[in-house]
Image (cartoon, rainbow, N blue to C red):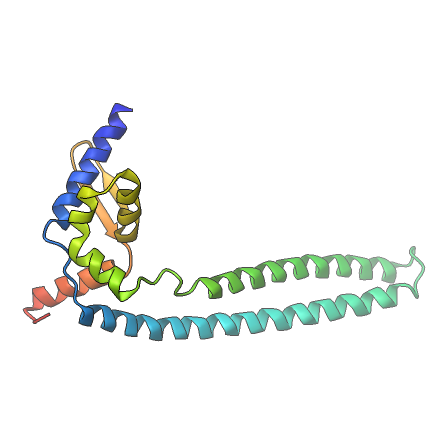
Length: 187
């Protein structure tokens, strides 16, 4: 319990220090990022829809074959080897059908989730400029909510945060800013 509270203190000290200057991203940076994200999201949606179409076509074919074989087996005596092979194939097709339905469901959920975590420009700019002040004055629940909007994870040793990862769009924007700064470009 004591280790956990020390770890929490280390993390919050890091967060306060990290955010003390504010992330200070601009509306222009936000718009450029989301314009690129929108293009990427459109491409991802197209790819997912293609995969869905392929899986739905496969499922339709599997169900059709299963149905046709099911109608044919009634013509055979259950002791006939043809009957047995058709029953084995029908069972394989049922397994394939279940697998395809699961894949279709996952792809549909993926498609539905695309873009749902997008912050509004007001939320983004507010977090970017005022995150440190908001976190310092917030209760534990609000601190947690805000930190979850900015940070993805932390690696903590006994005394300090060894590494961290920001959530999107903050991660990409900070990396772009650091890359531009290292090249001596204007932001």
